[in-house]
Image 1 (cartoon, one colour):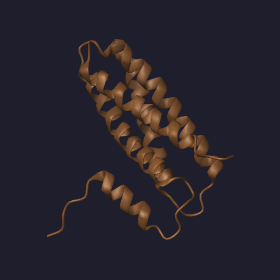
Image 2: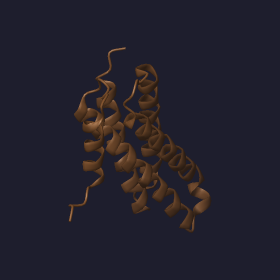
Image 3: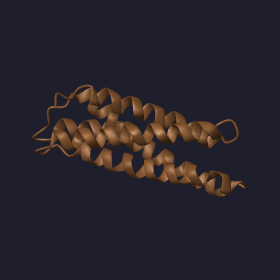
Image 4: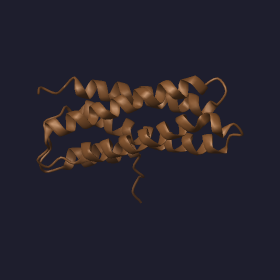
Length: 142
């Protein structure tokens, strides 16, 4: 019986075993992909939790930003996993957009963090993804 793979292990193994890996540094790339996937799931869950709150009308901007951030993070993770003939300029701008979305979402969730634990968790995931994007962006030489 094979041992189960964690998401992190699966990402690392897929990137390591690709026949034509791109030139981005492995550690920064994998950390960014992992955080994009985690943040996308966390933002989706936070939006859903906001919808269940009694004061949902006051959370409309938070919900919208959560969902936008989730979509951008998911797309960024997918784009970063594709190793064949990457367009570095496109990747750079996608990661930059992800960093901006995470920064924006974190700021909005932080406004609700004392009242809603799910917003605190989401803000933390967004800040970590923002940092992962920042580290990856620093490796580009455009």
